[in-house]
Figure 1: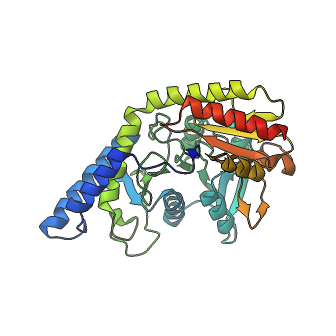
Figure 2: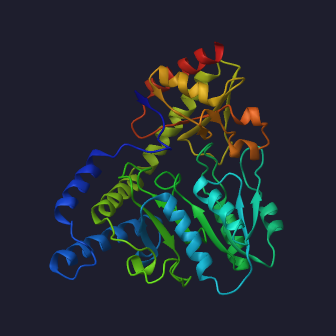
Figure 3: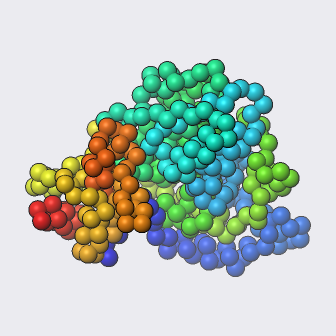
Amino acid sequence: MMYLDHAATTKIDPKVLEVLTEANNRFFANASSLHDLGNEANQALKQARTTLAGTLGVDAEEIVFTSGGTEANQLAILTLLESLTHGGKHLITTRIEHSSIYNLFKKLETKGYQVTYLDVDETGLISLERLKGSITNETTLVAIQHTNSEIGVIQNIKDIGKFLSSKGINFHSDLIQSYGKIPLDLKEMNLTSAAVSSHKIYGPKGIGLTYFSKEMSYQPYYPQTTHEFGFRPGTVDVPSALAFAYAGQEAIKQLNEDQQKAKELRNHLEYKLQESNKIVIHSHPTNQLNQIIAISINGLQGQYAMLECNRYNLAISTGSACQIGQTSPSRTMMSMGKTEDKAKELIRISTGRYTTKEEMDYLANVLIKISQE
């Protein structure tokens, strides 16, 4: 099976697995325990925190370990809202957010918050002017994903962050598809909080992190919390944190090399797919993550195209959620102005560190064949 679904998850790197295995044998104790083994685990956890902070340009005490990206997103936002002592109940996000944020904001609407959902242009970009026009005296929080997980468009987070900082508005960003693929400096981005996940960068599943600016004093969302600076309850998985840190370090070291390879693979696939006039590639000319390639086959639902690829031993994904035999249209594509039928055609190819040119050739041949049937 040729795996081309790296935006969903990555296979743990063998070296990362070695770190995880050794750490499970050596640092198995609870990092909060007061005996020597607990202290050793705590020191190892501090090292993992410091390493990951360094890859993001922040301080170690601003890094909080979570169970993954979804919790990192949701706990950051809920903690921010819990901590606000002034301001209104107006929130801003986009229609193309990951479900972990989009669904949370839908829930917050039932709790008395007013939410503005920004649309995007035909390429998937948010208009800074439209965002500015949505700000009110009641706006307390804005949440915008850095890199979209369906089409790979990269938002101008630095410009957005600079504006929101000048207005004193808290800013959260989902960096899960960006981390390890785009150089990130969270201070330059003027973020109050952010989310990162391990399993997108060849690290273990079940661990992520929240960045929470030390300039923002916070109240724990869960009362009487003692772990992770009072931010998140529960025993920290020290071995996974160490493996995550190693994976993060390696991702940053290989970032330029990985990006160059991803660009070459993308260009090669796009060139090959020119043979079919039924295949459309959705991308931004400049703000585009090369690893995510969004494709539509005219007249063919994405779910069918995905199943056909699976029949040819290709693991890809649809750009939308499949629910009990029904395909929901992609929120991203709908926000870009596509019809519901066109939004259902989206499929996502996502390449990785070990994807080959030969796999791109095979994929192109299969997609062209499917488009002609």
